Length: 51
Image 1 (cartoon, rainbow, N blue to C red):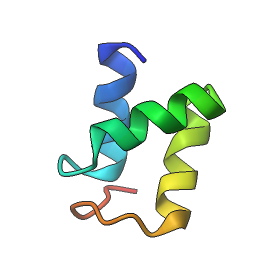
Image 2: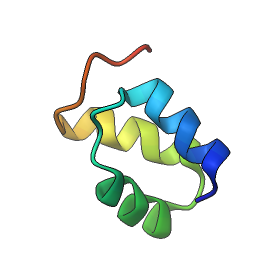
Image 3: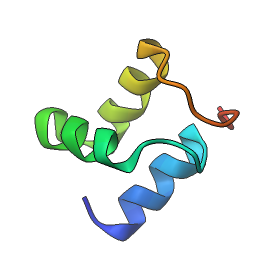
């Protein structure tokens, strides 16, 4: 995951989102647009999502 992708995910999920968790999901799922909904659906705590 590059810096742009990481920034986009953090904008969607909140700055307190666990980056290690995002990296693991990105490696497994691929596109960041697949990672964001999975994180939101899993109920992993993050600061208030923007979407």
